[in-house]
Image (cartoon, rainbow, N blue to C red; front, side, top):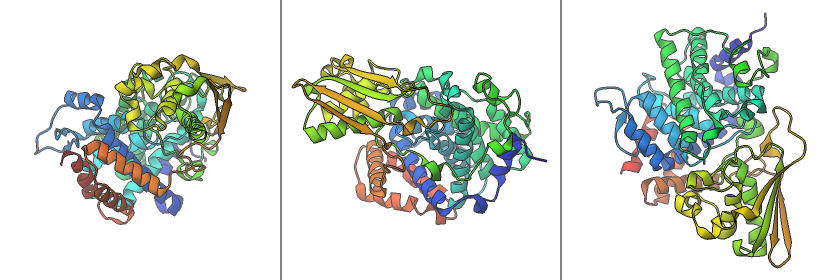
Length: 468
């Protein structure tokens, strides 16, 4: 008898990793993990994360807890996952999978790290166990989103939140080696804890969604381990799929849902962010920078700009006239204007002060985003659609560039050197001082985690560096 959809997910989580993971998957997973740790440490400096930390209860030294890298306060593992999750997405610098329009690594890694440092695992976790949990959790998360298609996102849900809780629960179930029944209950509980609205893009609540996904995934697993039971067919008829697609998708049979053949992180791959903002801005930033550098122009030379994108590609770009740094991360006009004005886009491009600059605010109305073409069918990877930047200059020239390869994607990947540089930038940003030699050493140690018998000391060392 064929497995149901829900049974197929549980079976995949519990499958021998040696049967499903290639060496390339393991290497790519380590790169994703290091990238997530870096952006998490940098994101924790944001006022939103600090405010969240103040709202969380402290635990005494004799109780299981995790020390915040930023405040030094100790929090229960569930609260630590919430804090890490918000920090991981605060800068919008974490990786992306456009197959389901979500950020896969951030919620999964936040939950895993909190569980490991908080003693939830009750044993040492090896590098190979951590890698398998990350790869399996993100795979479940993305393939589930792929099944639901663009309808889920179009309804107004933030897929990283609604899918992240499932991915986190799946990863933790794997890490903790739960049996099939407890794993099924954990996923069912997680399905009822899914949340996140796109309306909150450009506010502190968007990254909070990642924290909620990580924390609720951990809560769901711990509840299931304690005996709380849910419906073992939460992903079957009338369940999660139907609710989160507005009735468009319901139960699907297992043959339509293929996990790990190949893993998404291997094919088509995750997109590692080159710029700290919404991924739908990256091609327009890349195109603008290529034009400006080749022609030697800046914002003062611009008359009007057009950015032509695929139908549906502007859905997350809800702030054409941003008033804050967070707004700016979801603003096409600001991204183009900042690229022209500064000749680069980086961590300092999205402060409140940077966005509020008068010369940039005055030009936002001259930069237009235009969707064209037919609506994309369900499951289309919008990240692979071309983006054309057209700059009409005051001297009458018209310059254009079409970007087809997404920055940071397998077609235009971050090299190991670029990833190391991003890591060093994030650690310098987090600690307030630059020590590239130390950062590089920790990066190399991180890339060797697959061979270590316990990963906790590496995380404790790197997380503790922010407070040194």
